[in-house]
Image (cartoon, rainbow, N blue to C red):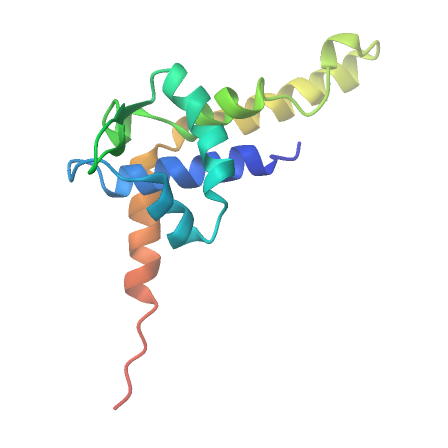
Length: 139
C-alpha cells in the first residue's frame, strides 16, 4: 500500500493544526510556506477534512482552520481514510486462495492498527522530541 501526496500532505495539515491547537486559527498559507507545499493543493485537501468534521474554518482577516476535536481524539487513520479511502493493500475479497486472502487481511489489519493507534498528539509530541534532540552543543 502506498499513501499518496493527498494522505501525506493531509496529515501534514492536521499535524500543523494540532501543534497550534488552542492558539487560534492557522491559515493554509502559513502551513504551505512552513512546509514548502502548494497552498492551492492544500485548499483541495482541506475540504474533505472539513466535510468530515475534523476541522472547522474560521472566516475573517485573522481566520484559518482549527481542529474540531482535541489532537488526542483524531487518529492518523481518520485522516488517511478520509483522503485516501479504505486502507487495503489489495482487494482480498476477490482472492480465491484462502492462505493469500488471510495474508492480505492480516496485512490490512496490521496497517489499520498502527494508523488507528497513532493520534495527532502522538505525532506532534514525537516531532517536538526530535526537534529538542537535534540541538548540537560545542564545548
